[in-house]
Image 1 (spheres, one colour):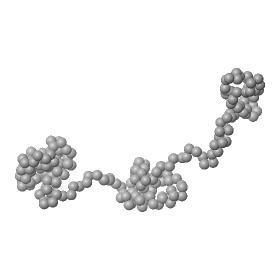
Image 2 (cartoon, helix red, strand yellow):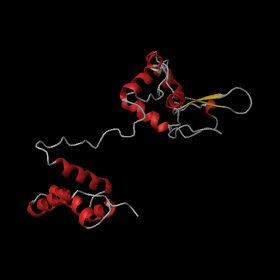
Image 3 (tube, one colour):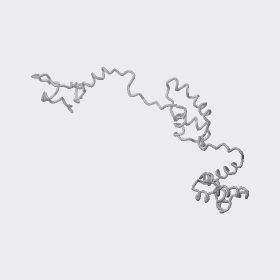
Image 4 (cartoon, helix red, strand yellow):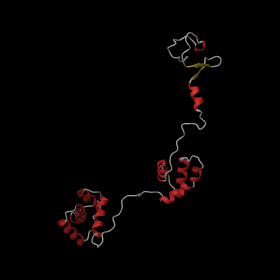
Length: 204
């Protein structure tokens, strides 16, 4: 069974007074966070269920109630941020700086060596997703292979699209030109005679 938290009697009286006068929901919850464990002999988990908050929130409400006795309200704690960070941002920048010259020279930086180096630095294993998030935080983009070769010649490609190489199994391949033969002329290079209106097909 969880140990009950001991609460000062003077704090309990202040919580009772606050609960009887306040019409603010946050102040009421602070008073409940003190009164339920003190008078109801509840654990933080049970009090959290009654108030409708998490267990850790009950402890924070109690702390906030204790601090409100001072003249100036305390600065609220920020509950965001990188709570499970493996390194500080400055340390991450220093780690990536060793790989930056290679990237600036146009060479690809692969994730696997980065992952191995990061594991050696931290002394523990990390997943590849940790490395990807690290790169994303410092605006390292993922480079995909180019879909067009730098020496591509569109004019030659267009010419090539008009031709089709077929192999007959013996001898050199036949070049078949797509199109319709001139009217009244035969086209022996097309194989069997076809209707002039029909496009030239593929011979298997």
